[in-house]
Amino acid sequence: MVPPRVIIAAASRSAFDRTARRLATDREKAEDVAVRALIAMVKDARREVVAHVADSAWDRAHQRDILRRLDLTLRQLGEQVERDVRQRLAVSWENGAKGADTLMVTLGGPGERIAVPVSRRDLETLQELGAELVKDVTEATRRRVAREVRLGIIAEKPAHEVARKIADHVGGTESRGEAIYRTETGRAYSTATETRYKEHDRARPGLRKVWLHSGAANPRPSHVHAGREYSKAAGGIPVSEDFILRPGADEAAGPGEYLAAFPRDPRLPAGLSVNCRCGHFAWREEWAA
Image 1: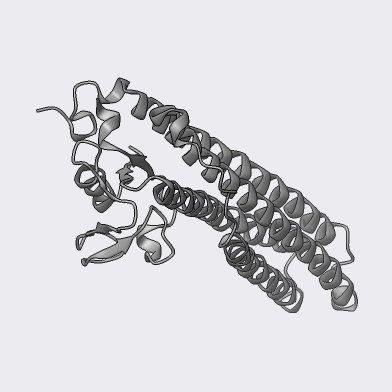
Image 2: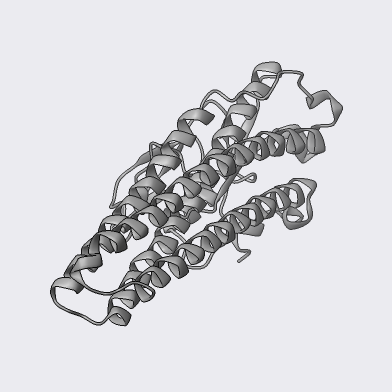
């Protein structure tokens, strides 16, 4: 039996699949670049907070000075990450809109070009959300670090032991931040793509869309199923309609039906959106000819 991902004989070699896979790869590469920037920022902050503890007189008399320096470093980290995530989301938005235009013109020719400027209607809201999420993480880290210092001084723990625990707390920002970066940059990309597809549909009605599963390891079964149910072979669905995700009891979201205009739709619970790498792409029946 032919696997669903290659259900049409020429699917893996068609112009559609080549373009869709290239756009998906470009999006994931941009996510990787963003995550590497986050990791670099966190590592710099971790080295700095460890140095603050190691280079300080480790006693109650100097507690305020130690906490002040740690607090300043972590506040600066938070501000740096917030600025960075806003910038990354703006880039992802532009890339998502450009990716939509690229697909339309590659498959449909010059007649699919539209003169409508790229809408940025929801970008600011997505930037606020992303900044709020990373702020929650850095603020939680700042509180944990302050608590660790106070407990260490009261319990008369050696400085190197406290420094190690502080480094662990700051390092935890990395994994939590990575999930936010990947999810929110992907969400901005897909929101812009969906917005742009609707603009194309208004210019030339009849546009449809398909769900393309990423093929990642340990996939969500509901996303794999969506890739089959809403494939190009199945004809997709009208751009104005929602995909329906149906997770089972073995998925984090729990059994049920969830509507989504695109992967990482804000309406989806975290269990169906965090770290999702699926994509959605426009389709016209005439492109199959």
